[in-house]
Image (tube, rainbow, N blue to C red):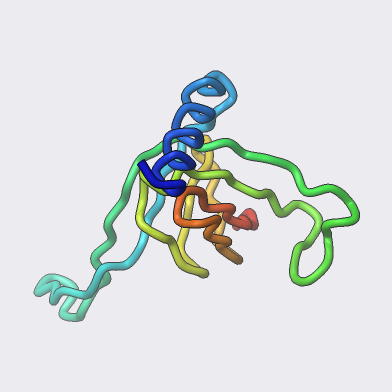
Length: 117
């Protein structure tokens, strides 16, 4: 077993051990367009993925380089979803947030900067 697999196992175990702290999340992204004959126009098709993740808090000294007051970090096991992108939406406990930035930590953990919509 390589280091990456060990890290994935450790992240998965940590997420399971802290499951009482985890938030219910739904990630929504546009996957394409389709023609709607009723509307007479193309409409976006959206895919949604439900998962659980840990919501954190940025410390005051971290609020630089695009991090604003009210932004929150979301810690996501990379085994649960593919890498999300800036501008997509994640609802955390039914509150919509827009993705501002995604840090991929060795392919095992995503630290996603969210801003409330």
